[in-house]
Image 1 (tube, one colour):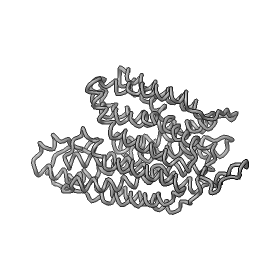
Image 2: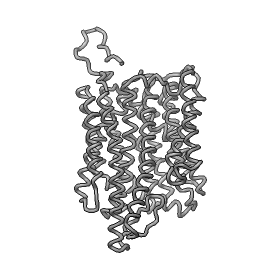
Image 3: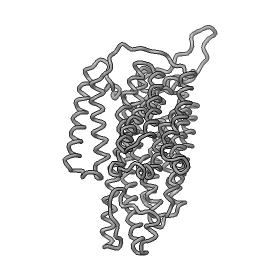
Amino acid sequence: MISALLAMLDNMIIATAMPTIVGDLGGLAHLSWVVTAYTLATAASTPVWGKLGDLYGRKGIFLTAIVIFVAGSVTSGAAQTMGQLIGFRALQGLGAGGLLVGVMSIIGELIPPRERGRYQGLFASIMAVAMIGGPLLGGIITDSLGWRWAFYINVPLGAVAIAMVATVLHLPKRRSTARIDYTGAVLLTVAITALVLVTTWGGSEYGWLSPTIVGLAVVGVATLAVFIVVERRVSEPLLPLGLFRNPNFSLAVGMGFVLGIVMFGAMIFLPVYQQAVQGASATNSGMQLLPMLLAMMSVSLIVGRATTRTGRYRIFPIVGGALVVTGLLLLSTVGPDTTRLTTGLSMAVLGCGMGCLMQLTMLIPQNSVELRDIGVASSTATLARTLGGSFGVAALGSLFNSRLAASLGDAAGAVDVEIGEGGGQLDAASLAALPDAARTAYQEAVSSAVGLIFLVGACVAVAAFLAAWFIREVPLRGAEPTAAPAAGGPPAPAAPLV
């Protein structure tokens, strides 16, 4: 949990410190790369970390990831230029990829699926704590100690994690003679990098039909096609394509992709609406998401315990998909007159749905593979959620900007704002300075754009709801036997792997 907190808390803290970092180091034009470098390194390295853990043992690989993350934190805090900071953030992201998949893989190896739900529910609470407390902690650290301590804060946490993993975590040792699929690793890294850059730059740095974006898309798709060909031929593939022949595995990974779109989209665009329309303070951005995050955390814990107690889980993705669609449809109706109570209740419905889905989109893929492929299953599920968030935020952001610009244009000049990066979002002070007619027109435009975002999100979430109906209730391995073994006899066999 400490290691998971390291990876989840970092971006939340850094987001608050970014204005101060730019003021100190300069390089405003390269600001987006501080986040992009971290995200790219995390996404591209996730499958490699998962496979290394499967081949060579998870403890040593996990310790390596923590050390790399801490080293990236120290060097990022010591950066003297924006270029150095971007490079060190990439190093930090490389370690973060190993942290995220390592945590889930270790749980998969230590805890039988029947018992795993309640443990993964605890990690959902860690995510909620990071999202709520990260921005507030980042502001306090930056104001009192300076922005460099926003990175240095990872050192004591990392030291505790390293000490505990090294001394009290006991995992089977393994040493494989198989060669690492270097070709597959390079191809997948290039494909992920190209596709993430398409979603990161498209509609903001470059137009969607610009040569840069089209070229990156072609490179990404072509490299992915070559990767698939290579993986079918190597003896120890980085990503065994045979895993996708299991319907449960493929369906759960697809649901995780949709969950990434919904979750990250909500976290980006709900604060936009609450700040621009409802007048909430930007400094309390974490608190604005409290109804959604608390509901997600609470339901995730309940689902985990229910799965452990009953061994049944198919109903939860179905209910979760229905709640996510319902919550998004409710949020699509927001307007300038919508109260915070109404918005909070709609967010809570959405959070309940995400809580039903969050851990099962990891548990089901893990239960669908042999134990030796737990790392690959965990990394694939993690990567799907990460890519879903990246693609979703980019596509929804482009749609938001287009709708906002069109709505403001329809207002026939009632408000004069520049539509740029961030959708032309105005802060509370700027909004207060506008004439009443202009402020009303802007708030109506933001409400219209946000409503469209959530309506599109609901349509996408329908795919996850439909997929949930095709999940088969495969017995969870490690389920409690129905009858005790005879005295001196062998233990009851585990549930069969399907």
